[in-house]
Amino acid sequence: MRKIEHIGIAVKDLEVSNLVFEKLFGAPAYKSEEVESEGVSTSFFQSGPNKIELLAATNPDSPIAKFIAKKGEGIHHIAFDVEDIVSEIERLKNEGFVVLNETPKKGADNKLVAFLHPKSTNGVLIELCQEIK
Image (cartoon, rainbow, N blue to C red; front, top):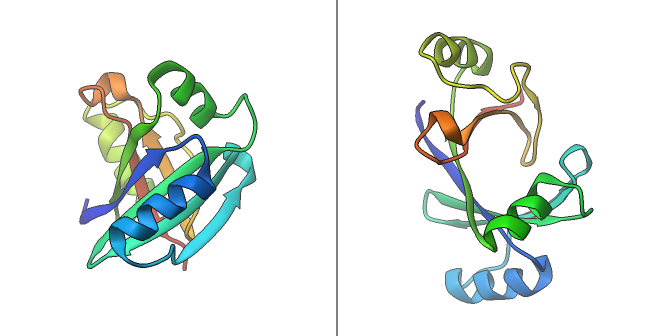
C-alpha cells in the first residue's frame, strides 16, 4: 500500500453534501459519477494531495443505503492506492484478512477496487485501489 488514496464518506443527499464540502474546501467537486454496480452516486473533492469521496445511495438495497440505515452518515471507508491489486489481494488473504471481492471490480474515479471486511481490520472497511491504465 503506497498511500491513502481517499476517504469515503456516506451521505444521505449528495447535492446538499456537495455544498457543504464546496464551502469546506473552497472549491467544487472535481468529479462526479454514478457507479451503477454499487448503487451509488459519488463526488470527489481534493485538498492538496488529499481526496474525499462522497457516496450517496441510488437505490435502497445498495451498501451505502444499508450503512446509513445502520450507522448514519459518516466515514464509510479508507482507500489505499496499490500498484498491483491482484498481488495485494493475494498477499492480504495469505495474511489472514477477509477479502470481500477476490476479483477486482471497476469502481469510481477510473480505479479497480477490492474491499477488506471490517471484521478483519478492527472495524474499518478498507478499499484497495489501482489506477486503470
